[in-house]
Length: 125
Image (cartoon, rainbow, N blue to C red):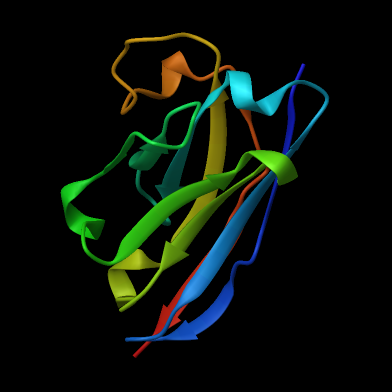
């Protein structure tokens, strides 16, 4: 069992920055691939970024490439999503999720075993 807790959300101005954290407990977090997803009001939850177990392999969806960076600190059992140059369309609830399997389509929600409760990010213009 893995428990995930997101933090760091809040209100930001367009062009500003936020850093989201996903803290894990209950298991060896380094055994899991971790993804970030987001859900805007009235829309489906969408993939944002993923990081492999070692932290060396990452992938970001096109809409956030160059603006968001996923990273992890294995010693702290935490995965981060650094968000810069925020836009109004980044407004959403952000979720982190952990997957214990290898070699799959990380953009799919159903490959993840554990989810956090989400943290709200609101970008104002």
